[in-house]
Image (spheres, one colour):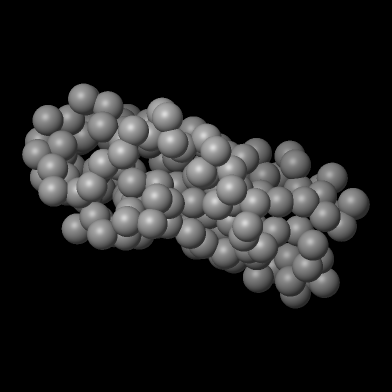
Length: 154
């Protein structure tokens, strides 16, 4: 399971280039390197499951998170492309899933939280682990928004 990310909430034209590079390096490129490290063993066993945690920012745009959303959209494409490549190679027992949980209120971006204040919330710390494990376990491959209302984010 790939689950790493950084966020720097600021308007695109005010965002330093170094911040954009760091966001893309952590939120996208790190997944390339992690999967390149683990996929050869899955291929040799002809089985495995790659789960890439994305965010609702991989399905819809969010103001002040242009770099984050671009990287998260790319992770969706990366996951889907690898799934198709695996099928083409006859490796149908290697599964690829991306999970798009909704935004987590970290308190780091008051503007973003104001924008998202109508989005339903849940006590993620209490409900996420068991519910997320069941969500992933039930999936053979593909995508998923978790919790189910995550795609409702504007």
